[in-house]
Length: 242
Image (tube, rainbow, N blue to C red):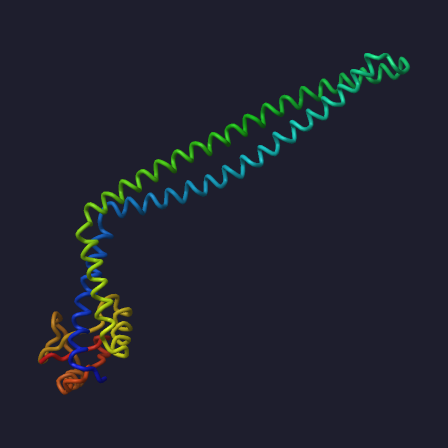
């Protein structure tokens, strides 16, 4: 594959930058505060799910409260009418007895509804209390997250600065390298999880003790100044510098 000597050197530099980026990200990931943040994130998700369920339960219970209150209001209105008719003495003796009987039944019904209202109100208050508790727990998790992030920023300040610098350098180099060569590098780097190019000096791969097939060594040693080799064995671009 054709590649200018300048692009070859930039590709090797890009590999160094990418390797350092991986190291910096790994260092950040290993910090205890990151594990704390991951755990807090899971805790927050659990609390959010619990809060959704609690709100749904509270709304259902609130509807029950309103239903019972409306039943009591209708009972009150009916009782007022019956009390007025009974007080007026209108109607036959039989009618008055029937009204009194209905009023007695209303009184019993009122007792049932009042007890039901007490029960559903208690459930509603518990649901509201549960939501308030979850809110406090969410606030506590938020405070813990802020503390963990502050700890991470303080501990990883230099790492973050260097990472930003390396990312900027990577963007600069990537923009200067021939796109076809860069695509081959990115392809191999993604497959290997980090390595996309190796440097060959003589019959040695820099930084590796590897025995390549003789056919590959021949191809590498015969490379011209404006050529690179795509190694099947190494699954990477090979740049010859000597």
